[in-house]
Amino acid sequence: MERWCPDALWEIAAPLIPPAPVRPQGGGRRRVDDRAVLAAICYLTQAGCSWWKLPEAMFGVTRATAHRRFAEWTEAGLWPALHLAVLQRLQALEVLDWSRAVIDSIQVRAEKGDLTGPSPVDRGKPGSKIHAMVDRGGLPLTTAISAANTPDAAVLLPLLDGMPAVSGRVGRPRRRPDKLHADKAYDHKALRAEVRRRGVIVRIARKKVESSQRHGRHRWVIERTMRYRRLVRRYDRYADHFAVFTNIACALICYRKLVKHPK
Image (spheres, rainbow, N blue to C red):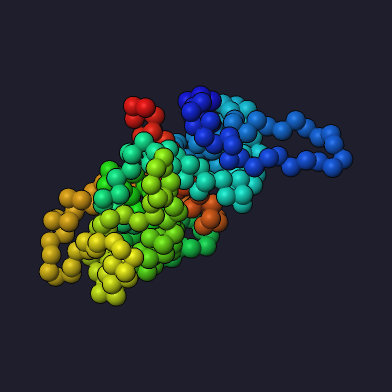
């Protein structure tokens, strides 16, 4: 269990986990340990498999229990809170680099469920999109889910505005990068104006004017970051469940950076 939910990660997550419901009549079976369930969910995120392939004996947690607790914690908002908690620790150590952010999307195949649509890059097969914004070093700041046929430009402002305030030891909490890089899919005059209105410098490649390779030297960090195994294919019927798997992946990516940084 230590491998999938280390002590340092559990120390961050434990205060955020909602208390167990109390049975008015008392009795019942002993509740499965929260840390074992969190370890099982982290395993699913990193192994890239579906719920049916969860090795129950490894964690002492049944698939039904793990999925039920996952749904409970999702409804309680645990996963975005966990990602934010790790970001705040990175901000306190001055690891996050707000001088430049990159936004992009990746296509994933989806079996079924809401927020799916015909993929324009996968012969019209059903799929979803993960939209993400990362800092200069590639650390994920925020994500969103849409159908595969949703234009990238339609999600830029909701993604930028949905960024939570990240506080550190000193100074005001940060919600905006100094500069935002994006590819030609986001090239709209009105969109540029809205981003500038938010106090962010815009570096969006222009269609038929600027080379993608020139701006790609900055955007490659997001492609490296979001290639997480559980995010390559969507197994979840509900889009909010798939969205929180992106939250978990982002939290784990940031956590790995946190434990590698000298205190």
